[in-house]
Image (cartoon, rainbow, N blue to C red; front, top):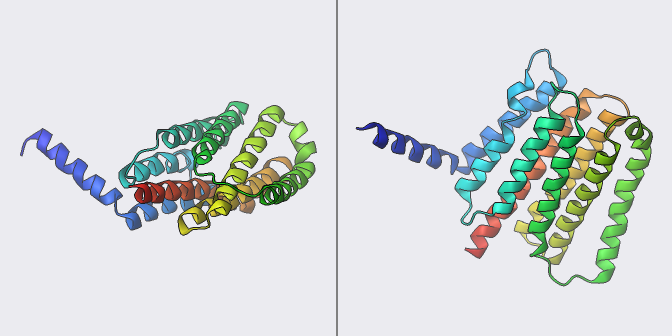
Amino acid sequence: MGLGTFRNAVKEELLELFSQKKLANLMFFGIVFLDALGAIFPEYLNRKITIFVPFPLLLVIYLVNTRKVNKWFVLALVLNFFGICYFNNPYQRYDSTGLVFHAMAYFVYCFILFRPFKTIGIKKVLFVLAALALLVLVPLAFYYDGIKQTVVFNATILYVCLTALYILSAVLVYISRKTETHRFLLFSAISILLSSYFQGYNLFMDKNDLLNFFAVICFNLAHYLLCCYLVQRSEEVG
């Protein structure tokens, strides 16, 4: 067997392994769980590797499972990865550039979700908007003093606005058609909202390792669920 043939065989085997959803899920959530544990026990678990693995792995999972690649989603994953490199990296000083990358990624997510919109009654839109405003503005009021004391105030507000816009988009798409596929979006929105609560309290109120643990889990889960939605959508569209 030649070197080229061997490489092709290995590549095919790896693709087959990653296309098995159970194995891919175990790998993704295993690494995310280790990274979350590292947030609680940094002296025992080094996050220098685990924090950077989930998004590249999620990209691979998406590419080998989707029928039609959404280039915008690939771009958003890359932007989120840069966001982690700049802002979420536990071994570097927080940098507002990372929040901007994350905010850009959520804007791309909103663009992706714009097409599935169907006619939604204005009352439903206003109800969701009012509920979301309450869920966002009340915690923001509690965190406001802590945010003002940081050097990332403007970037934080930008991140909050675009994250809220993504949550609104995801919920409206789900309301427009309550299917199992769209339910992934609803849970993705809930996960990113919870992650923002946990991370906000941890950064701007009082550092809490346990909340940081759940923030890591919910943050990665939100993007994984959006990935599941897009994979399912590609299968439905064919």
